[in-house]
Length: 378
Image (cartoon, rainbow, N blue to C red; front, side):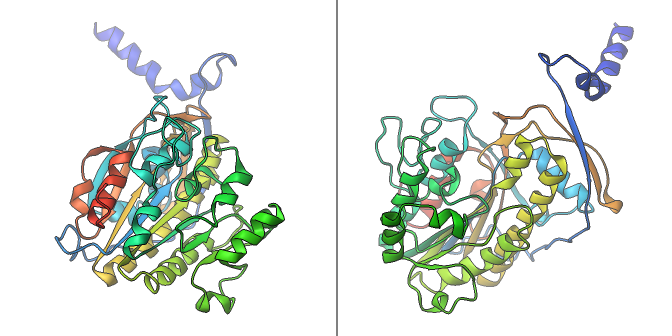
């Protein structure tokens, strides 16, 4: 038995090398590495964390495809620290959709946005293709200002789940056309070029309900009641768009919510690089997302009545950290897949009532808890 056990251990230890050399019809491991400059992290005081104080605002940050492997890779490449891993409240989320053990972003985004599981490909619709009220639609009549922000296009499945109602995530024009009738106060995703590629009727309808700007310095920002901010690019070379616009959205919504606000922030391109098995892009997007987490946690620390929740819609790539030299900003990893996986994803939380999320829960449970805390009663 002992020789067999030693042989098994040796085979498992060499799996990454073995997997790369197998024929195309067998499982492969796709490897990559990255060097990054340390960006540091933020550690709050924890004075309000887990308190029974009233929750007025909720900031939900979704790292698209962000499983435990991506978190580990980003943390160790960044010298062993991330703002999100500095937090003390940790749980897990099961992501299965109503019709598939492995979810897509549309079904999981809808679960986070509505508190109800649905089929893959459906956005804001139940399994019977009926509209489900989303968090902004429930909270807006109660006096909350609501917003979405993403490094994807606005018709991407996750941001769309918080304002659109379509039974096919690929109906991109129809998703854009849902925006004017939504309950959003703030939206930022996609680009000017994508917006201007929509039918003129859709553009006109959106402009009738939102002030549309292409720069955060536009004077219309301050005077607007509802805002659509479209950046120049959502590519890797977009600078500090995500953390800076997270701060912008928080300030904008806080000034307009009579009772409070809800904001969903998506780091969409973690998933995109994992689909391509590009380890360097995965890590860099993870670090960019963590800067947005920092902006949210810093606000929560100052405000005292804001709950920050960080999780993912699903895991992508079977991403695994294989080795790292944290002091040098070096990390290497392995991908087991180019698609989504059904593995649970981590959840981190900070602020009042954060302990209610320190468990294994469904993605739909997260939405239900948010609504209960803010008086949505779902």
